[in-house]
Image (tube, rainbow, N blue to C red; front, side):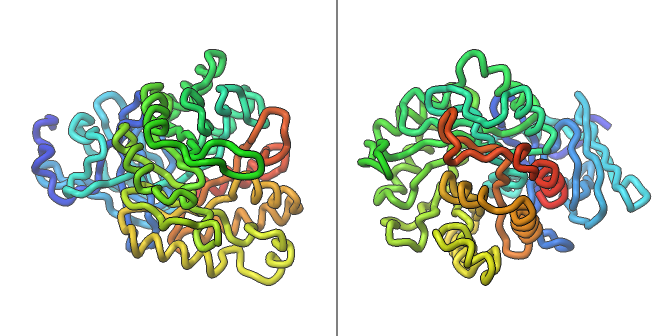
Length: 395
């Protein structure tokens, strides 16, 4: 079969396969929404060799390419230089489908061949916090431990850098570049945090001008290390839509916003439009009486559910994500026993499809070198192996 036998980019019918440029790599992402069997949404990277949980791929040579959902134990997708895709489903006793796909046909940044935008589903997302605004190592584990651990956990999206409000921040120092490249070569899409406020003791300072944010966004984009950008304190800016628009004008198609202020007195604006991912902290750990609440409330609270429904109702093309807010919720989470931590992580992971959200796994977090505030080390805390298993099983 010749690659020319496959449909052109203008004649692909109802295919759900799309391509994205993740850093220096071109990664094909198959987007599955509302799986009829499991009800899950997930993104499937068709590059290298990855474990699957919920999907199998079949194609028609002369008509359309489709993603069809089927619940099974697991499988492997892999392809080489000529992009031969082979799916072997564990537990089904058969190879369901295989075909030769022209990579050039699919690797079109941000294009989904149903004619609609198809941003990648933020599954297997994790905290890494590798470097701070000065480019220094910020992860509680050294690079020789943290990098293999992140790769082996099967992470697809990693919050790796913190640029804060520093126009030149978030760029790894030369001694750390090799570690970023290892993650990039493992097809992990790295993200960076920016702060739309100037720093202030005990809270946020004055709002930064959009012109400054634009310069910072352009510097980070030109660095080539990051695929997506995370806006901290989003709902504390009255002009947050202007901030998002500024980032997109600087070339950032994948914008994630921190909206943990949602529903609180400190909220001054509504969530902005045109955002890839809207995030909020897990409500159960958002208050000082969290220990009492853990004994009487569901780990996914009514406020969490209201937020998920609000995002889905108002921004159907975006994804709601829940996380542990850094530093306050991470610090509270650390006070719990390992058993309690594992129980919460398991519940949050297993119930992503139930409530319709994705989560960020707390592999590693850090705020400042040598500081324990906001720092979490899943290896030292004894939750890494379990998080790795949850990432694989539930995304």
